[in-house]
Length: 295
Image (cartoon, rainbow, N blue to C red; front, side, top):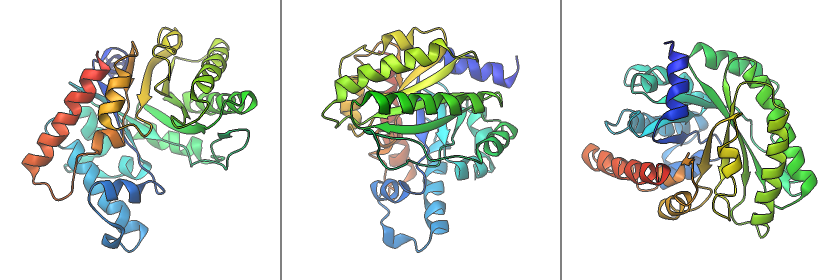
């Protein structure tokens, strides 16, 4: 079996969750602050990225970070290009049974029609080609729904699937992530609009199955038709601002959805911890998120 076929099987059938280690330039200072590193610890972007890479390296080389419970990990571009444990990060991950994905979007446009579309991404094809060369299995791209605006939600889904077609042409599996803001006053109505538009887009999708990364719906199991859809490889959930405890409790109510948490995975980790405390804390978080994903 080829590595890609093994990765496909791990994502399709693996009993675990996908770690999101893809904080980009805008969200990195916040992630470092949560890790106990303030903005006074770096004086430029290079130093900032070196600090976040050290954090990610510590995570992916921890004994508990392996394919038994963490079936995949989403990487920031600089992380994909970097090394951990003396090896390229995608190679190290797959040696541990963790399937590597790459965040490929370039951030969000200003809000219009209640949504934030992705910024144009002219370098997407070149980035996908590099990802394939490094052994990456799939990609992730995020846009945001703030209000239940039918035109806005339709535009977000159409943009996501158009970019997914570009990605799939490189043999990569796209994770389509139209996040619904869990603080939206129209959250449930937005969930329903999104379900409708994704169902329409899937019906006309002619490529290999895609993945979906969605906010946990206000009504449990609302997205079950997407979990069961033959053109969907896996539906993963983002924590979206919930604490880990809240996110796990909500996720466990939704059959077939697994976690793809970022902040909720990392919330108890601190730079000042010794290795024993760090590994123990990470292991506890992995166990908790894994349990909610396989509930």
